[in-house]
Length: 514
Ligand SMILES: Nc1ncnc2c1ncn2[C@@H]1O[C@H](COP(=O)(O)OP(=O)(O)OP(=O)(O)O)[C@@H](O)[C@H]1O
Image (cartoon, rainbow, N blue to C red):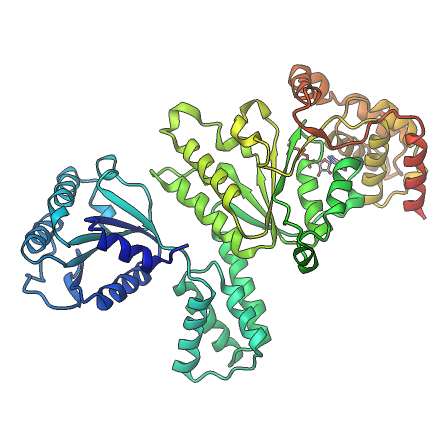
């Protein structure tokens, strides 16, 4: 892939008159443009409403003090027509292009300067262009700095401040790696903080930088670092899904790469609410020992035009820099649920997600979860998008027994003290979340009764008092299960009522008990 300066150079040589650079790193973008202009002997001026024009390279006779955007544009046009080859960088111009005369002026200039070698560059943190400018402008995205650039930032600091370096070559690489995903400014600040805190750069700096990055993730509106992953023994049933995951336990190791295995792309978990989709995402993180990031699709939607796609891109980019990791895209259906009334925002967010899933090179394993499968568009389900699509159904008898045992153990109760077979029989149609709730309700019941110990009867009673989703929302559950029967996904569970399975599952429970 072409880097930014190469791409930018191509555009100015091709005489693109209006170039929009999308980046939160204005200073870095300007440095890059300046470098190209210096190499090509082009005069380069920046403009902002506080300082008017500033000469970055070359010479000009222009009135530098002009601070009015419309007059500044007039001057750029005049200079461009007279003195071909000048590059103007307009800072924060997205604040002005909501103004119709400025939009009109920009459009006219872009058309009039086509025969000259003059280009107007606009730096902006948001990628949404006014409709009128879509055809006239080319949009370039400045990617976050790569490892080489971050290493240069580090080098500058070390040399500038004469810092002691207690790091091996590999240690230095780790420091740089830990800062990947940050802007150059953020990296400079976090390197400086590490140096000031420790008085030098050493192994402590790596964890400090990693902690700063976790903070950065927390600040990203839609991403969340999840700790407290779930152990597989806390998940009852779902044997097919667990076996699939166990088979790929080492999939992200170097050995797997050397062997020639491609890194798994991701899975989709669809099905009935409360059946353990979220639980599974957390389990994968502990099974594969990879950090878990949750992407809240609903939180991607911002109120400004273009904000949602920018947030999506930023969140996905941060995830890539943390890779290898699990990226749990929670409630993915929300990316398509907004429909016609949202001026195409949901389609653009959806397209951003799909393109990223298709093109991503970093080992981010996507776990997409959804309850409302009616809202899922066919493009998402296309073969090859996910490695596998699993359906989480109502748990069958032996799975329910396992879920009871799991939740009793979690609350420091021995499953041996309960009649699990009876509870499993009496919870037909209940999902894991409802089974868990029946145990919690029973505990409250027993606690309020002189803090006595809970019994099978208590749990059975609390089960009866609940109306499970499979009854209260029978049609919805039936619709979801129909989807499985149509063969559109693989069941996450082994068939339930097969002879001998009950016994095998009981043996498993007993082994765990020992
Ligand atoms: N198979 C299971 N084994 C053990 N516990 C389960 C299982 N399924 C659900 N639970 C319990 O129910 C709780 C809720 O489940 P979870 O949030 O994973 O369901 P979900 O399918 O993601 O539901 P939703 O779609 O409504 O978010 C879990 O925290 C867990 O305690």
